[in-house]
Length: 62
Image (spheres, rainbow, N blue to C red):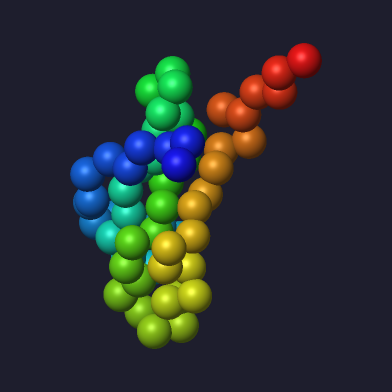
């Protein structure tokens, strides 16, 4: 609800090939990380639908 999902693309990551999409903050439109859409290897299917957020991009409001 607080993210926007960008276009899908295929990427080769350390753990294999995946279809992923970048995710963006819905308020400031800053890129926050990516979401795994599809894993090409059966052993990596547990990642599908999960998001990776870059810790350096997160801010805490006071």
